[in-house]
Length: 388
Image 1 (cartoon, helix red, strand yellow):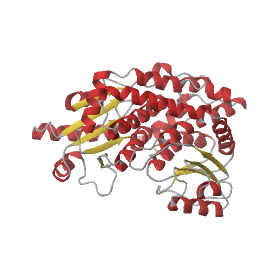
Image 2 (cartoon, one colour):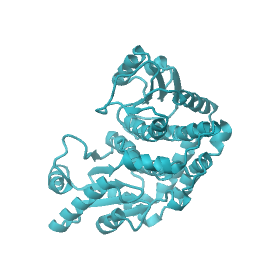
Image 3 (cartoon, helix red, strand yellow):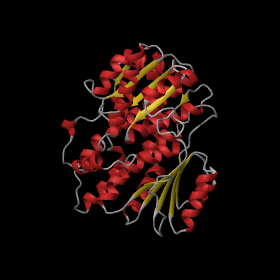
Image 4 (cartoon, helix red, strand yellow):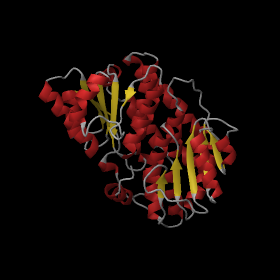
């Protein structure tokens, strides 16, 4: 398995893409975020999860921002056109923060178009900004960002790189949008840390580099490799897989569930995320993958106890050893992370990266048994089924 980890070359590609970010665009992108009082994150699928991990941390920072999510029941309007003046009056200037590798995702595109229309109709381009992170400079979202805020280009996987080589292809480029999604998650986490320290934009590349060094250390830990191997053993079995957490932990769970769900569905199994409306009761042999920094969150501990009582298995990633969740767990990995209350916590980003090779391990095992899954199968599932 150590050899497998070493061959996950998409991790190096993520680092290289972040190093190649345009300095001026990055500076403007950062300035528009820190100058706003409110951040409205928008995206779809794993891209939204990557953005939400950092936004959840920003909301908890002592020097953070107000985070308003479009999915919140208290969002003051049916769309951004209707909500913009209310948010400005109540809280102040805001930034619509968009994360979309393709630059064409429907939800963020509609949000951006509505806000752009409001800016045009009112002539107020000072209190509202559209910040877009994307891979395609010619996409509709990129053009809106150029006109009404800032567009920052982060390379992802190109269509020409898609092949039918199976696991070798996935080790090189990740699965589907892994390179962009994980890269964007690291970028937003670095922005949160720089913002917390009132750092100038010129220091952002240093924050990114420092962050990635810490994140990649996880893959040097033999215990992490054993953990991933054990989790892959459980995921291979015929069972339903549940993911859970609260706050940033829930966003990590959703990101992992999307990709694991593609493979489990091919095998004829189901994947669920806690709090989804279609959540069934677990059966004996089902597994529950939990992400919790403290390992003591009462609601999550309660979920684990109920799941265990019904005959399920608990797999957990915690930031502390000897916790209530780790004691209940059949498989536990302690992802040690230094953290001070009121500052952004790297634990959740590290957990997202730690879980990212699991689908590749599963595909590798299936390929060894003579069952190859080309990427177009994942692409088909992604196009017809929305998990988030």
